Length: 103
Image 1: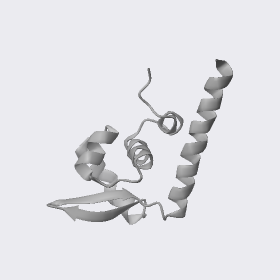
Image 2: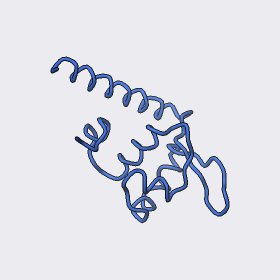
Image 3: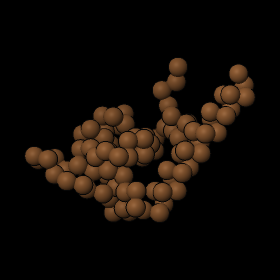
């Protein structure tokens, strides 16, 4: 059984792709940076190296603060992110169709 999603298979197993894939998959929820790092399989210090780029380019938005932690989620209002979400769904549909045809 493979652990990678279709999105990661297509775009590569690098930290930014893994984080974006996690945030697309769980786009309805907000997470702390620690949770994002853990759940996407990226080291916290690695996440910190590119997180500001994601924020500055409106890929993610801060939703609230709980205790000392800021929570973030995917910015689904960003037109580019909307296209990424559609692309992810199309990749999943294509993958499912491929499995159905080969079985």
